[in-house]
Amino acid sequence: MAQKSEEFTLQEKDFIEIEFTGRIKDGEIFDSNIKEDLESAKLNIPAKPFIFCLGEGMFLKGVDEFLIGKKISQENNQFEIELPPEKAFGNRNSKLIQIIPMRVFREQRVTPVPGQSFNFDGRLAKILSVSGGRVITDFNNPLAGKTVIYKVRVLRKIEDLSQKIDAFIEFLFKRKLKFEVKDKKIILHVEKPFVQFAELFKDKFKSVFNMELEVKEISKAKKQESKPVEDRKAK
Image (cartoon, rainbow, N blue to C red):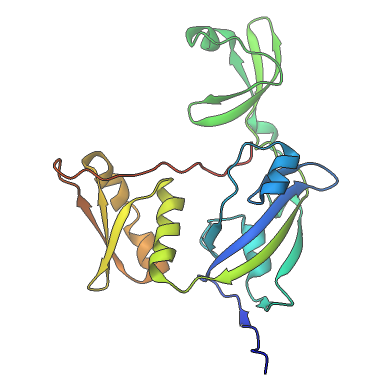
């Protein structure tokens, strides 16, 4: 007798692995973790497994809301999700169109060119026009005001605690970090400059895993090997 495929209903705080592709409605692909789609869109993003926790801000909120409550089986694991701007990357905000004096760019030895994007105090902006001593810039998300469509395939629900913690750490800190689970605690090993920052997430770990987070400083004699992880953001 053939074994019945696993069925489960997605719930908030479930960790799942998905394949996905996001594109502008009637337009181009802007994000994916599928090699063929990335290549066709000429996106310089690595194709790799994507694991996230539902309802914890690790992926687009509109996708989370759509998936929570869905019954997943081998026959029902692929979805096409259309999101209006307010459920995707937000509506355009005219207040985010700002004029920056040309001298600011000169001080940084940067020549502003219309259409160019740049990082300004940690915020991504696109130059709309350059006129005399004024540079008009747009700090809206490039996908703001656009309806987007995500094609999502749910591959599996993650049950292994270590895999969940690893994915969560990678999301928060954009790198792999060494950790261990002991006495109902998650013990995170980080270098000294990183200790205070990591401790800011104690409540978040408690909310997701119902476990305390203990941050331990790595001794100089035993430095941690950590690999930065590319952040997944709309370009």
